Image 1 (cartoon, rainbow, N blue to C red):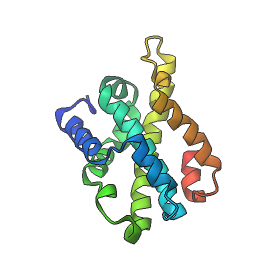
Image 2: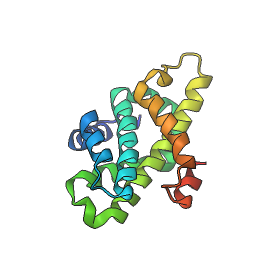
Image 3: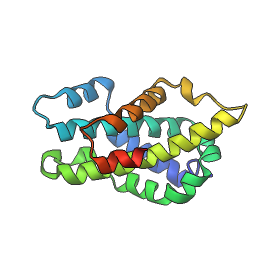
Length: 161
């Protein structure tokens, strides 16, 4: 019981309350002509991180059940990164590289959780239909696009393969 534990569940809740933006707010951030390409791509990744965290928060049991390896490997670091995350509370323009690195790190951990969850839930005949969630389906499509997108560094896209 990792995501369901009171402390981790509360950390995810605080993160979502502090960083959750409406679809329109994200659209403005991503399409803002004044934002650099780096900021736009970071915002896209962050939006996907939120999709995974929202799904974990709304139904932590299957994530605990199906993500044992990722929890063992990344769980503590994932929660620590979420707890100390300051993406939307600082001036992004002055810290683009650091902010991008933080978001990419969280995103890559989310990818690991997602892939493990998707693999195990497809094998389990009693799966809860992760692919029926439209935000998660979009996460999956975005993941495929990021692998081939030239905006992202080769180092980052190599981690996605």
